Image (tube, rainbow, N blue to C red):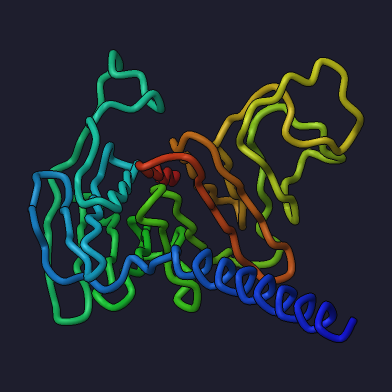
Length: 254
């Protein structure tokens, strides 16, 4: 009996070791994008930078008041095309000025709007033509990705607790505001659903923020993912899933 008990405890210990090992491996799969190591390419409307994780990040002005950010964990970008825009419509893609210091890379258009890319931690901030911050990364929560799947997790700082968020299309949520909500981007066949159920039958990965009479929007073209708008911690968390590409379009009102 004592021998059987010993074998049971040994087996239980092995089980917990396997569970612990699995947890460690799962946690270790997330990798920080890292620091900017160099500017790999300067384009007429933006830049491509390389990072210490070997990922590449493209930051460009897609239009006068639209900034497109692409992250390629493998270092290779997919095609330029995106369903987020109607290419039959004329765009006013600006020619930008790129300046560099030991701390940051700045991409600015002729109207005064600019994007700051911090070399340490790849912190990206977007400023309007008046020099006011539109949206920026959380310096305490760096962007991370899974090299095996291409999933990523990025956190943006809210400008204030009273900043209001709307969007994501039709939802079965209680109110119009998306403050404090956790939203899933994945369609389900829900022909009859109760109030509060998410996701439902459509996924629109676009939201816009309103604060002191000004607005900006974020459009994410990942295949699926999650959006968390934390009301108390002044953070917006965007997480993709099942995809090897990431595109964030940040629109601001001029």
